[in-house]
Amino acid sequence: MDGRHPEAIRIAATSLTDPARVAEFNRWYDTVHLPDILAARVATHATRFENADPQPDEPTYLALYELGSSNLEAVDAAFAQLVGRLREQGRMYDALHILRRSMWKRIGGRFSIERTGRAGTAGIFIIESSCSAPEQEPRFNDWYDHTHIPDLLETGLFHAAHRFVARSGQAGGKYLAIYETATDPLEAVNQFSRSHRPRLKAAGRLSDIIDITWRGIYRRLGATRS
Image (tube, rainbow, N blue to C red; front, side, top):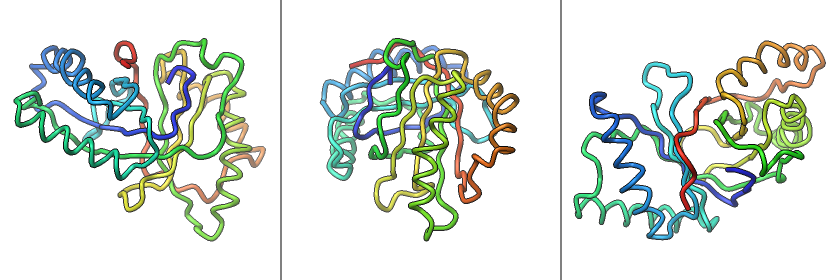
């Protein structure tokens, strides 16, 4: 998100039903679909990513939309109406397979370091989670905001972080954390796992009440549109 800290985001996780049409699909997404979405003003910025660590049945692509409003119900309705119109106009892609859509409202602080906003974002690390002990959610959120995210930023592998809470009634985890890196995201995550996670675990700085419901490592595709 290149130093921006949006109040809300929408994520569309997709795959392509016909692998032979990758170039055509990417051209449609970049030159037709994103301009359609942004022209309708349902989002302020849009960035596309590709899975850097593909697993079976996992989304190949991710579109991250930064929203100008935190009224998620109203934004979701606007997106639904827009996509319906685009489908009627023949501007949707027939080989697009949407695996999940989700909407999130920002919580916590604006997690930044000196390089935030100046370091280019090559990829993102996403963690969707819930607190396995709901009665301890205040402790869980305090750990995330004041221990875990600062620990990850101090490694130098990531230059910005964001926390969100899910739209009410949404399936999946309740919380979302996104970490931006200026290097290859798969290597950044692997380096964290090799060099830093064991140290943090030994120091008791990891949580025993986090339930990870989904994780994703995605490389950026092209520039952010606005």
